[in-house]
Image 1 (spheres, one colour):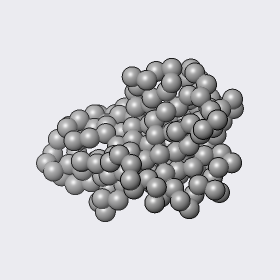
Image 2 (cartoon, one colour):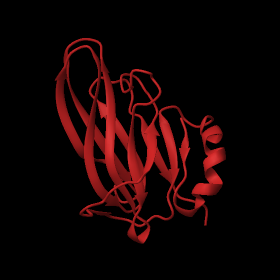
Image 3 (tube, helix red, strand yellow):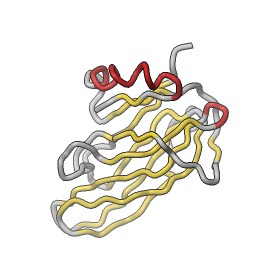
Image 4 (tube, one colour):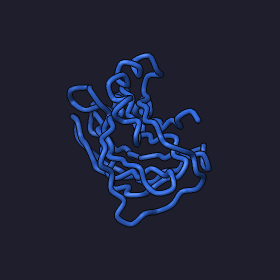
Length: 163
């Protein structure tokens, strides 16, 4: 698990972030967002440039069990955060059908909303899919991955810096 810095804090926080995040909740990675502005807005052409990894949790894991997936993000206008492509890994122990989801949490929608989903039937083994979210979210607090019967939902949390 690691902490992912945001905006101008990137250089300062990058070195200590990985060590600090090891003490935080399992299944959660952290990023620091600049400010909270309510509401969600779609942005045509929104592309992330900074990678962040979801921790491996349950069946949401890559073959090395080092991550559950990753996403690309960047700061966007008015304190929002652009989420670009989200990649999810899921392990199947037998042939099964599962719905994979990317769920976004914001200050305006703390209960979360599914912004991408796909249902897959796959054989035993590891599988991944990339979701082109390409939206900027104001007040972003977390991005989580789910898959039916996956025993957990790994998240990357976006933490507002102290004022």
